[in-house]
Image (cartoon, rainbow, N blue to C red; front, top):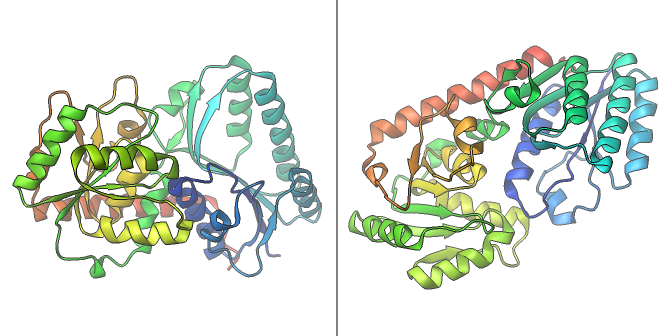
Length: 349
């Protein structure tokens, strides 16, 4: 009997990284012969289009209708459920606890009826005692439960599998033989909600130019557009803004730039991973009290940490041998994740 995957794709609608990690997980199930039901909530159509869902996929906007479909398919013995990958804050607010308890009940029903429960690519932060207890119950119930970083297990208070972020599978979906031979760009992508040291950034721009590289600001999360537009004017460099493009259009545009990038400098995890897929060296901005990027990348690929207050631009001199090593590491990470999923998700193809 063919199983049906049920998963929510509702997330930050302006974030291509949120699309990517959900899209890659869904693709793993589709490759294994699953039918598909997705909850889209209030996501705009251009966001949904970016998933390239198969013609037979069912898209549901109403949360109650989605739960009814899950329960009906569970009763028929054909339901599989997957938590969307990404960050999850464990807080004991009444709203968060009510939602977590309700979803946990739905998961329990699917499992009782013989369905699988996949929790892969999760990242935990927070310290709510009740929410931690509910998360532990989820981990005990799941047929697969894997974190995407080394910081999540301590939050959970118990050991857990650690697998690469779902975006590492992007490397396998790209034809790197067609990547531009010329590496003439240093891609820059910055969060709009955190300050960036302008003097250090100006030094990076100057040093890049001195080495024959062109710094380009790239928007991968639409809300960063204004920050990038302002920095473009201040620094006199090009900015690839999102503006009025669709999700698919913006992704196609930034792929062109990443394929030509020597390195990607960013404090956004998935800007770095989109670059890694094109073998652009990942350079994470060092930020006090922020550990998402190092705890996600460190087990799988080497990366540079750039302190703009006292910058070291050695990454600008990385060699093609270094790039080959990066590509091999990224490929190995994707393979490890694919093998893990194969061991945990039944194949119905």
